[in-house]
Amino acid sequence: MDKVVARKLRPYERLKLHRMRRQLSNAVNCRHARIILLSTGTVANRETAQRCGCSPAWVRTIIHRFNAGGIDAITWYPYYCHQLGPRKFFAEITEQIAEVALSSPKALVGMSVWSLPKLREYLIAQQIVPAISIEHLRQILRSRKINWRHTKTWKESTDPDFWLKYRRIRRLYKSGRPLGGRRLSIDEFGPLNLLPRHGMHYARTGHVDRLRATYSRKGGVRHMYGVYDLERDTLVGRFVKRKNRRTFLAFLKWLRGQYRSTEVLHIVLDNATFHDRPEVLAYASTHRIRFYFTPTSASWLNRIECHFTALKKFALDNTDYRSHPAMQAAIRSYLRWRNGNRAISSRSWKSYIAHRTEPLRYRKAG
Image (cartoon, rainbow, N blue to C red):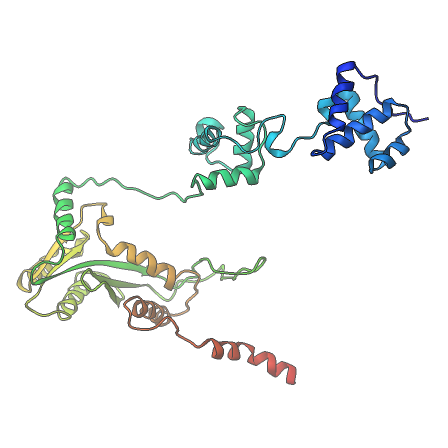
């Protein structure tokens, strides 16, 4: 005799179980209802399992669930009409989820940053949603264009002449090319040390490039004076061992020689101490050069800064140069491509494959 049997049914439970047994569109509820009805009809659990197409252990599990929680404990709902609430949330629910994700985690959970598991736990604890998976939560945030973003720094300018300098530079950018002149942006890129720089690259799962963890800085540093031509959309630079008024004046003389002497050079640069030395200002006043100094802590007004970001990514990230000539050659190669002076291909794919597999062929032949 079976030790696990369904308890005595109440009249409304029997009617509901019969309705569930006739649910042809919900095979799970139909099977569960049949198990309970057969168990109350003194049918053995093993025979019930054969009739319902399941194991005797599953029959006992369903009976235990029914005896403990009633019909609700054995009822299965599709994901879009679950008894705890719809899994496909309405617009106001998803908007509230997005609002919570964009709120301060310090004030809500006492932590400095959200994570998907902690956000899910908070949403359930606040009864904003009854239940949600981490993947579904990620998709909701992505549909609302909420992604992980790195923080950025911002420094407020304390320059008393900020707005005067700001409007002067903005007028230069907005007015277009001056009559008989050129618009240039100058800044220093560096210091350039000989050290491994981490980066990102395409790789298969489980593989990552390795870089040195220990290194010495005995090779010294280099600096690059860069100049961005707004009219030609070109970026060029010259490398120096030290940046001071003498090297900057030499760079300014080289730059002046790259353009016709009749053209006025309108140069945007920061307010480094060696940029406004008397000898530099004297040379600029006698050689058709006009300086537009950015305000203090407002280098973002200099348009060359964004081009330095791309230069660092494509020439320095994920590298470990052992000498300054090798690093400078890589930077010059990128600048030639960026200025349209060389094609994207620096080496043939076929020759690269042949060179990469050449040691393997020799090893097999030996």
